[in-house]
Amino acid sequence: MRHARARPPRGLIMKKEIIAIIAVFAAAFSSAGSKEKFFAYRSFWPETAAMRAFGEAGIDLYAVMPSNSFNTLGEPYCKFKPFWVWDETYLWGVVDEQFDLVIRQNPRAKFICMIDINSPLWLARRLNISYGLGGDSFTDITNSFCIENWRGLTSKMLKAYVEHMEKRYGGRVYAYIVAAGGSSEWYDNGKGRAIPQKEKAWANYLKERGLPNWKVPSHAELYTPSFDKYFDPQTQMPRIEYARFTEKLMSDAMDYFSEIARGAAGGKRAVGSFCGFLPHTLVGKIDNRQPYSSPFLDFLGDPGGYDNRKIGMGGGMNAPVKSLKLRGKHWFQEIDHRTHTFNYDLSPYVKIFGKDLYGMKDQAETSAMLKREFALAAVMQNSLWCFDMWGGVFSAPETMALVGKAHKIWSAHKDDNLPVRAEILYIADPDSCLYTEYPELKHFKQILFSCGAPFDHIFFGDISKVDMSKYKVVVFPHSYEITPEKKKILDQYVCKDGKVVVATAGFGIIDGKRLDPAFTEKLTGFKYKTAGVNKKDMGGWTSVYAGDEKSFSKQNFMELIKNAGVHTYTDEPLPVYANEKLVAIHTKEGGKKTVYLPRKVSKAKELFTDKIIDANGDKFEYDFISPDTALFELID
Image (cartoon, rainbow, N blue to C red; front, side, top):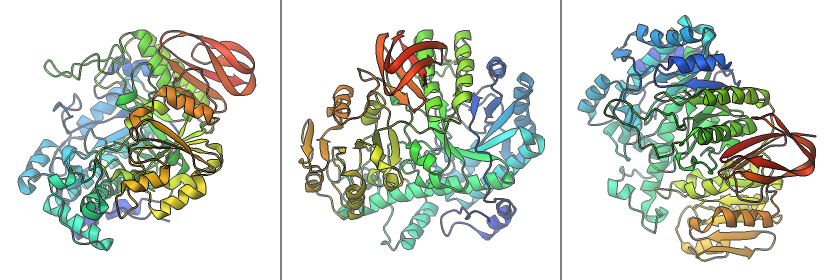
């Protein structure tokens, strides 16, 4: 059977467009491409020494993105000239040169083909003159997708690109990733603006849902909440629904182009996409439920959060990865962290940030940080690639030796098929996020990744799909909307069995139709924005509420979860990742620390150093260096 077909918004696809791509769709069968996990190398630039070093370490998969566009700083993405030079005119020699360069460094090379479908300058200029905006898909991808000419030319280029790769490189291709929008990661930076074609898509969206024919909200309406930080559904529903429409439009675009890539490859290759959770409405990446369930995507991923990278912090992902795995897909971590040898100079004139911003100071910090990210991938059995950006990231011999060691560890455990040993559940609630411009995310994410215990992260809608009996603490950082239907889910699965339910700020302040601070008090037992961390026995479960999420710290949250019966692996609030076989601990300050286990073992092996530690019970001591990450394999 064929997949359900991905389409542009209703009313936008034209007969000639169907004719142009009908052959592609015919090849899109229900059988997906390879779902095998991967460990790869990527760089914007032709870093030949690093390519060879990764090959010598046994890593033969390379992500390559020939590009026609410019990055956020206005610099070309790659060192080669554009290959898409006019309507249906492609310089395949430019593309081949970039893949052949890799093969010369490593004859065993295979590829993740990243296809930059963002507008070349000539197309951006042409369409912006015609439509005012939307020609540049890097900034206005949801407007671009509504332009028939952009969609048609881009579809033809994508199909031709995949067909060329299949013909020339065939068996070397592991997967395709269609890259578009802001940072080539499917972000919309248009601030909600709409050209007439997008306005038409908006009108069709409203009609299909039986909603009034609202105009596109003005800039002031898009960015002016009526109560505190929240948009009121009684008076601001057009704004709330327009945010939902933006998410839908972005997801439709991802499906549309991913299906073309899959079809052009004859259904033989995996297809993936960037799909980060960006806590800002109107950028199109706050509701990823459709991509997570897409029949055209096998894997998704994004860079680790930039706000949780420093030494001593927990690293990790922004996205609800357990929800993705519930759908039979795998996550890839883009490790684009800045080592002490990172190249900050994009040109003689353009530099990327400052060397003190998220960058490692020396080899010790680089090693501890990379081990933290590699350990997370091993524990969670994620895919990953090492992103060399503008070169230099892996130039130190000690760094490269660590990459080789990490690859061996990851290869041994990537298919363990073990869930995270979590007793804490973190809830992402996309529908609630639409009621504010900036949903709470950053602070609680930092705490959860540094509380001495692992956690799971899922969508609200997946609460009924997991075994809730294993969770003792459930965290709702931004569930502002609790409808009667959601309240039933809370009553049936969450607010029972002695669980501790943690909520902040405007939890449940909206019931789907009205906004009322009294709703928060009714659900939590505390008045809206009650100061401090407050606790109340609700009869069968415990409510913990803070009017400001920053009232929670790593220390008081760790105390809270201990009191709730959650097993903590350390005495202090440290980043911990764990499943039944592996335990990883990251620390800024070294010294002897006791590691507490949820079961008795005879020994533990630290996998980066191969040290064997006698346990003979449910705890052991380990002498950490400063800073450090240790990854222990438990031996019964």
